[in-house]
Length: 184
Image 1 (cartoon, rainbow, N blue to C red):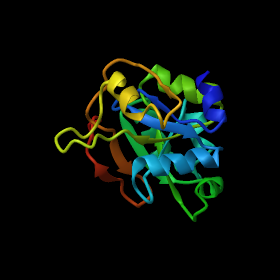
Image 2: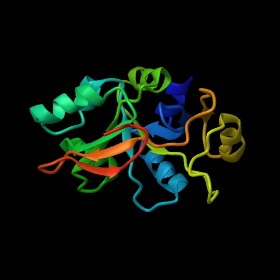
Image 3: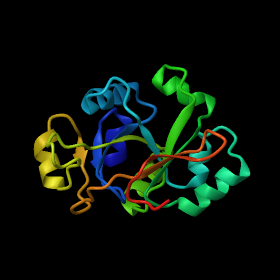
């Protein structure tokens, strides 16, 4: 049911090892447009939620050995690795995007969806409008708030309130972009 919704351009909310996230099918332009609108940003920073490193490598451009070793060390886990993108990534966004954020969460539900879909889920974190809370953590509240905009909310229990740690590996030295749930 979830994969069918995604393949038909629907959006889902799913748990990760950090916070709940919006997700769509990377190959559905309508889903990408809807994610952009839902995020409230002109150019949101999407992540590709992957099942495993092999799936991630299909969307990255030539990972060198040190970056590949880091990927093996950090994943699955609460990290987003910004790496050079494979050429097809730019076509998904109709831009000249040269980098991609890769996530392989330590969450069986998220990885199972990416595996069943056969490619990564395009995703962005589910932020709260509250000035105190950054993220919505209760799946029932998510369902109530977004029921008209999403197809499915996958209840993985109450989620975390700390996002992934984001590290940029596109420069000579890795750069911490955002401190989050993963130690670095």
